[in-house]
Amino acid sequence: MAEHSNIHDQCLLIVDFGSQYTQLIARRVRECGVYCEIYPFDVAQSQVEALGPAGVILSGGPETVTAGKTPRIPEFLLQSGLPMLGICYGMQAMATQLGGQVASSRTREFGHAEIQLETNNALIDALATTAAGRCNVWMSHGDKVTKLPSGFDCSASTPSAPIAAMADPIRHFYGVQFHPEVTHTAGGEGLPKVFAQDICGCAGTWTAANIVDDAITTVRQQVGDDHVILGLSGGVDSSVVAALLSRAIGDQLTCIFVDNGLLRKGECAEVEAAFADSRVSNQLPLKIITVTAADEFMSKLADEADPEAKRKIIGSTFIDVFDREASKIDGAKWLAQGTIYPDVIESISVNGPSATIKSHHNVGGLPDYMKLKLVEPLKMLFKDEVRRVGASIGIDPQLLGRHPFPGPGLGIRILGDITAEKVRMLQEVDAIFIAGLKSWDLYDQVWQAGAMLLPVNSVGVMGDERTYEKCVALRAVQSTDGMTADWVDLPYAFLQKMSNEIINKVKGVNRVVYDISSKPPATIEWE
Image (cartoon, rainbow, N blue to C red; front, top):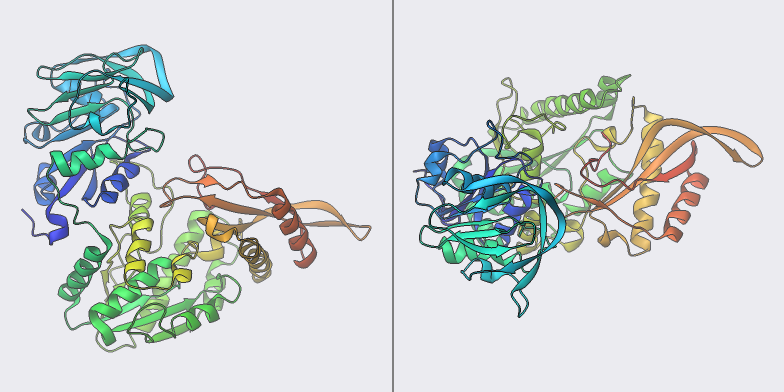
């Protein structure tokens, strides 16, 4: 078994069958103070033994267990003696593999449904039920369990799914056809808590304060007396990393801020000013080296229009610049990054073989020619956890409340090729949009906002003259960790004002549109 710090000693394993809600399950578990990790359904026994979980949660998934070659629960997990909770597909897989039966239902259940409790147990009792034992839940399934495995009782039912929940309290095996992890299930957040703490016996040690202590200890053990370079952006993630490293290793840290020419208007000066005072750590001001490399980035991006190619160019150039600057610092052996869990999930599949949605320049390791090793203290944290950690160490709320900004910057918000004029144009548009959100007290109601410059010219009329100029798209979304997002219903009066102000003040723009796509199916960024 692998050595763990205290906050990892008691944890849950989440087995992913490809559900869109898998990350939400993980967050629900962590919200009740228990650490967990996500592994694909074909996880190796050695990986599970190294993790040492106190219990297992099986996610939902898009497949049907009635087919022959669909994912199954690893047999060693079923024989491990660990408590197990199957959700949707996870329940169906459990029923099938333990001797029950699953069949396609003539009546599928998608969305709101009402279950009737049939028998009581510690898990199902966590739901917010009526006096008659009914509860509103969220369903998403076309198959149903038709025969219980030996040792199981039916815990809940619906007219379409006579076995909507099942339990074997002796073996601590539980299954629910509905999704307790979504907010639409009344009292659903109580199920992961009861399962993790009461059934699996996990203490609620996964707290912001404990995460900070663990990160500091881990960093000190990892880097020793070596010098660390931090890629500072001024965003939430790098700010929290700066604070953690400052506390952990003090003057062994040097921050490098790269101005790639693709930042927001005035952002370089804002970042330098923010990190020159005490808003990030009681050990500030930090040692910061600012590198002006806009010409280098723009030269390498010249005439490139492919989104993935642009990301790779920006990422490789970023690494080149870092390598040059780091080589000037005596004793620098580590590169610290603000990589977080959603970055890892989207770039390096944890769901088995899958296509990469988009690459991240701060994920996946460093090229062999770089002499620096990676230290990533936030790598297993969701964005909401990063903010809670930042708050616990006293980072200024305004810094913590900053909207996420992509590593490639405006380079992926300018669709098509990138020129200095397009950057100038989009910087002005973005500045107006963000300032408007703040002045209308909308900024804190939005998780992320920005503007996209589209490769589209449209006809307009300005001053009785015909124009043929650019179109920009405004984007504002609400999210918790970036894995899913909904577009924000901004007031029409605000959007009207933004459109007028952008068109009147930004030369080269004559049309403004608002993006009302959610993630999925769209991503937050356009590239």
